[in-house]
Length: 149
Figure 1 (tube, rainbow, N blue to C red):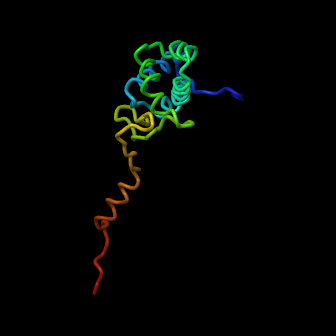
Figure 2 (figure 1 turned 180 degrees about the vertical axis):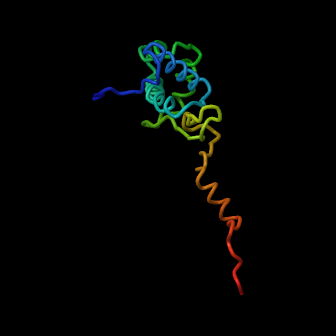
């Protein structure tokens, strides 16, 4: 049983998984948004929110903890200067996940994880079912008899 075992394994060893999380968080802090799978986005949201909270603290100890996790000096510098300033009055919820649909190669569900407060917003993917339904409503059905008048 997996009681109290938080987190996804993502089919990787623990070292590979931790490295993946660190790299994705560093890219998110550097670029404000990244495109990845739903599962990875949901996992790195936890770490990204923690890093923004450290950035808001602004102490030397918090900076050292952020560098120990992210290991990208430019991303940490941006976190403590720009990103922390942007979220100084916000109590939480620093990231947003927008679902984009499925990837063409392997049908993996893709999403965009971004820091809230970015200038551009992205529309979520429309449901495939509603597109089919809209198409069906626009054209007459096959075999439909014309109404006799």
